[in-house]
Length: 408
Image 1 (cartoon, one colour):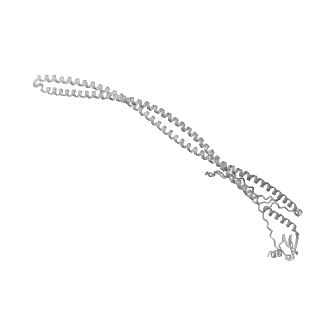
Image 2: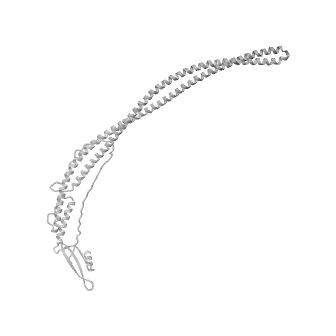
Image 3: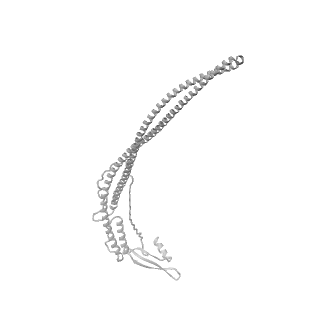
């Protein structure tokens, strides 16, 4: 079908130029670079085809040899060499390929040696990092426990300091209350003194009233005598005089009763003054003791405050150490993870290198890993993991579609 279409196109007058595979009479494949040129008659119809062809079999074979060698490189065989000379125009390409393949083989051998050294070093780093990570985690746990215990002590001391401050405030309030009570007692003593003084003055006034009642009684008695002498004319005046006399007697009696009561009140006031004075002395003693207690409590509060401040500073320092230890643990975990990643990358590099054959019986194999030290078990999850994977792949593919041709 393709061959028929080829000649159909030529019959339509199309010009065709390309590289073609032809089979000779002896069955040998021949590659030609040809052009088919239709020739038209006077009526514009194709009446013949003129073919110009050049044998390019050697060039195609050279390119095929180069393609096979490149496929060998793609499979990992770095021993590929092109021994047969190419066409003069292509032989430099053959020489450049041989040189590149040789240099690539040498480079891969050097990479293999360096990879072995990296793998050995990464195994040692991984073992040391695991050991360091375990010890750092243990240290971090110990510091964390110390920080927690110190935090509890700091909290307890802070509570004690707070309670001591509250006790100091209560003592100061008690002191103020006692001082106010002493002042009230002194005022009460002064008030009772005033009451006693007023009672004395009232007693004097009652004495005057009693004297007036006595004089009134005498005057009423004299008036009654004079009214009796007057006979019937003085009866009315005698009655009034009698009433005045009785009133004076009652006033005198009331004055004596009031005087007795005032005397009793003076006795009670004196007794109260004595008791209040004793109370004032007791309150003064209490105030003195409260002042002493306040001084002691203030000293305790100050000491507790200093202890709390010192413990807070220590707690801050321990927390700083704890944070630094945690950061160190995190960095060690990252270093350990990086070392594990480096070891894995080295193994992957060996796996990649094992695909290549550099000849002379030096096929690349991963070296035996160094003895690994079992890391200390840790319940702390890794803080971070640094992994870096770089994949590089080079692939090539060449396909030549061959078609069978027959000479027309």
